[in-house]
Amino acid sequence: MNLLEIRNLSRSFGSVKAADAIDLDVAQGEALGIVGPNGAGKTTLFNLIAGDLAPDAGTIRFKGADITALGPHRRSAAGIARTYQIPHPFENLTVFENLLVGAVYGGGQSERAAIEPCAGILRRTGLFAQANRPAGTLTLLERKRLELARALATGPELLLLDEIAGGLTEGECQALVETIQGIRAGGVTIVWIEHIVHALLAVVGRLIVLDFGRKIAEGEPHAVMRSPEVQEIYMGIAA
Image (cartoon, rainbow, N blue to C red; front, top):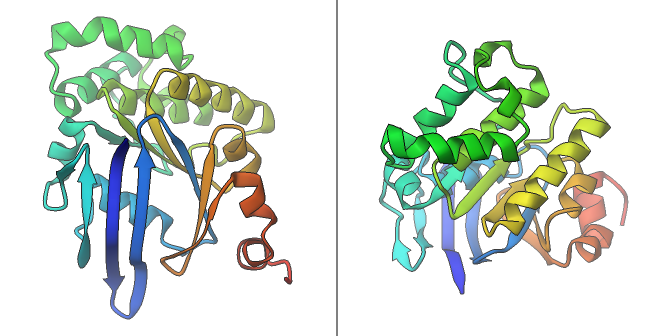
C-alpha cells in the first residue's frame, strides 16, 4: 500500500525548474533515500510535500486523500513531519518544552496527554538527560537530535529528513543512523535527503536521484550509486 503518491509535481522559480514533472510513490513502512547535487531540487520536493510551497502543477496524495491544497498545519495533523537542514529549536524553551510544542501544536494532542509520549521520544533519541536544559545550550548533534525528536512528537506516519547527518563527526553520524534505524523499525515511513551517502545506505531500501528537478535514476541503492550516469552527475566522475 502506498502512503504517499506524487504525480506530475512541478514547481519553477522564474526560468529554473526546481521540480520537473516528478512522479513518486512511497510505500507504507518504506525507507526511501534521495540524493543529488546542490540545486537538484531535493529540498524543494520536501517543501512541496510538507506544504511549505505550493506546486505549479501536479498532485500529492497522502493515505489516499488529495492534500495538494492543504497548508502545512493540516498536513502535520494528517501525519507528515519534517526536519530542516539547519535546526531552529525554540532556544529559550527546554528540550522537553520543545517536544511539547510539537505534540500540542503539530500533533493536536493535549499537553497532559503528550507528557508521557514526549518522555519516551526523548529516551529513543538520546536526549532524556538533557530534558530540562535550554535548547539554546545544545551541541550540534544534540540540536539535530532535538530536530528529529520534535518532528516525532507530532506523531507522524511519514517522516521527511533533510540532511540531518550534515556537519556531524563519523561517530556522531553512526549514532544518529542507529536512532533512525530504530525509528524505521517502529513503523514510521521515512524519506531521507542526505549527502553523506554511507549513512543513507545503512537505512534506506530504495534510492532516487534528482538532477535539475528531474528524477534521473531509481532503484536498489547500491546499484543506483554504481550507475555511470549517477556517478557522472552526482559525483563528477566521467562515465
